[in-house]
Image (cartoon, rainbow, N blue to C red; front, side, top):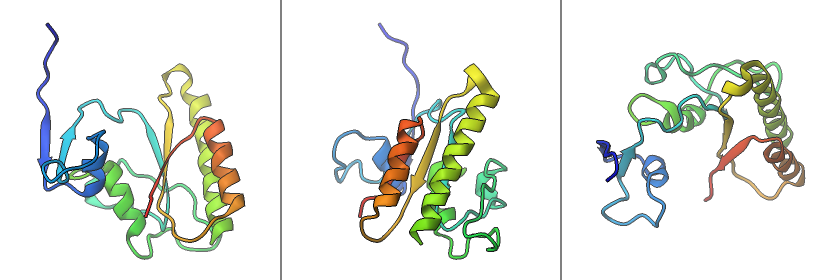
Length: 159
C-alpha cells in the first residue's frame, strides 16, 4: 500500500494552472481544474521577464520582489498589467524590444548564479517565465539557450 494524500482541486482555474496539473491534453472535464500539489514549487525562484510586476499586490503576500528594470531609466512599475498577470499565475495567493528582453534573460542568469552561490546545497533551482510576441530573434534564442545550459529553466508562452 501507498501513503495517500488529500488533494485540493481549484475549479474554474485559469488555463495556465489547469495546464500544469494535467500531463495529457486538456479535456472539457479538466480544462478548468487545477490540482494543487502542496509541495510544488517550494523554494524555487521564478524570474518573470515581462512588462514588470506590481510587487505590492495583495495576492503575492510579500513573495514578489523587483528584479531589474530594462531599459534603464524606466520606472519600476508594470505599465499594463501583463507581467503582474503572468506572475500571478505562477505565485499569487488565489491562482497562482529584443535587446531589452535579452538583457532581462542575462539578469535572470546572473541572479540564478548569485542565489545558487548564496544558498549552496539548499538551492532548489530557478525558473524564468517569458510571454513574448514577435518573430524569430537569434540573439534571444542564443541568450535563452545559454541560460538553459547554465541551469535556468524556462516556461515560454506559445501562441
